[in-house]
Length: 324
Image 1 (tube, rainbow, N blue to C red):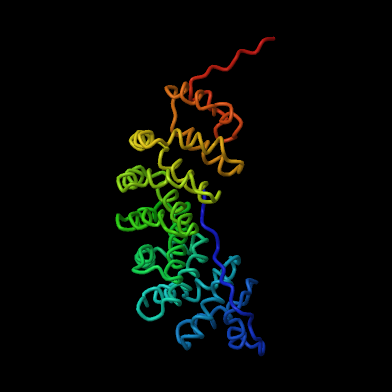
Image 2: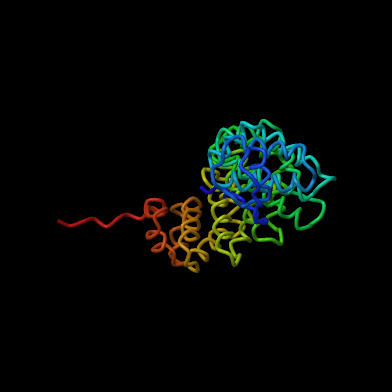
């Protein structure tokens, strides 16, 4: 299983003036500072995000994004200060400030790392706006970045939160995610893969829904990506779609997944990619595939990868009896 990481903006350094709470918040505007700060500083930034000038709102959102990138303490303080509702409001400002919307999406992505905040974000109505960002009307830099952050946020919200997955798995949202598997930007493709792979874990009808929307052939095509991260995420998503789902296994076979996984397993030198491909093969095959896997020359490789070390059992290969 995989999950999304934090997002960090890279603005200019802050100009510190004095140490009072209000001034401290002002001093952090557009800062890349990620240390723990007092709650009143977080509260000051939230006030600027709500009522500052357009430029100060953007800078305060950048500062908040970075402060929430790694610090659980800052994320909790931001939650307490009501930042989720503020960020959802910013995401609604579609026609006013596209750059601010992008920054708000990056910030909410960082907040989505913690379980209490996942529930708060889901309850705030943010999923609706995040879903809308997956299919922007134009491919500007800000729109593409917001799409990547939105996919990463939805991915993060689904991790270990079974009750949130159906909220994300709306038909239009899944269709938009699958569309982004063909994005010209590899980072966008990777975030979409991660979300597809996470939202279906343990929920059979979502696996079927994704399959009907064309997820399997789209993901198979990404196994030939030059970037290891995208290969791994696509292979992991396929592995999850196949688990305990016979219809998806049948469709995957028809689309050549067995051969595609075998090719990737033999060609990659990246251990994470190898593990994802081996896990996918392990989920896909049965004893009837033994001859084909031996022909493809991957049985020995599967035995060596920890996730598929029991491939002999799956293929019905009897272990040699020990003598003595």
